[in-house]
Length: 117
Image (cartoon, rainbow, N blue to C red; front, side, top):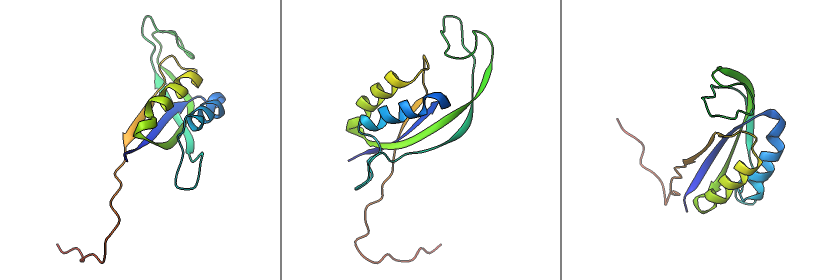
């Protein structure tokens, strides 16, 4: 089973709504735990181009604002549902949502030889 790390940038005003949508769509399961995620403050920057309808800022002007980064995990099979749920809850016209494949090493089958250089 392929697992994905999810990274989402969102304004502080929408953290709870986006996190709830993310988890309702099935993300955040780790073993016997649900709704697992982490978050922190980040500074986002963007410049709306002609034709954009920005949630914040104005066309042609570089904008900087405090945002929150939400990180979680999901199975590859859940990615489409998670993406659609997050987009529906997110206020941005073009939300930043990354899905990154995770490397999960196989469990050891016995003692390992020490690394020699």
